Amino acid sequence: KDIVGAKAVGMKTIFFNEKKLIGDFKNADRIIFSMKDLKEAVKILK
Image (cartoon, rainbow, N blue to C red; front, side, top):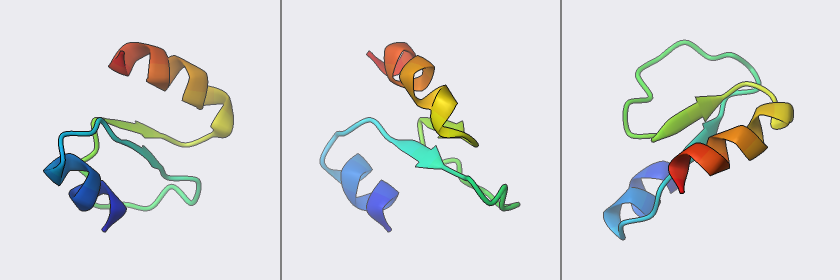
């Protein structure tokens, strides 16, 4: 829900999938599985 709202107002999004859920998360610009990946994901989105 947060991803959809953020995208609706033009924000870039990162989905933190720490539980490694299986599904279609195509709305997120990036998907990370660990907080150690956050810095790199933010760099890529800039």
